[in-house]
Image (cartoon, rainbow, N blue to C red):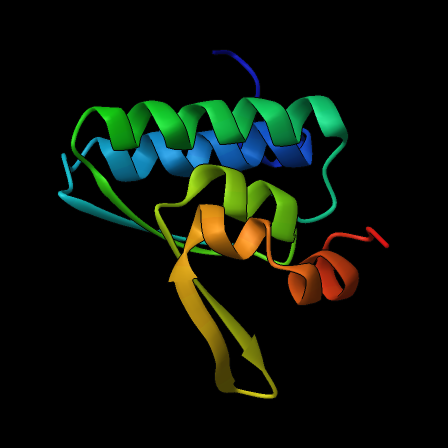
Length: 108
């Protein structure tokens, strides 16, 4: 609590930004790349926060390049390429789509 926000790690700064937004008690929270550049343990912590918020009735609009993290946290997903939506559907269905697996999840 005594630390200046600019000296926090990237993950801590992301958590602080989410906490500040939650002070307004939003019904919708928009997050843009919350896991960018973070170590895996922080990515997991942010995912847990997003899931907990969803469980508590907060709608989340998540823009995320980490496809695995996004699909694990989402109910619905949209894949954009060059500004165009190229795929959409239930996140669980997209996570199991062979094209998504090859292109975004690094599976063969």
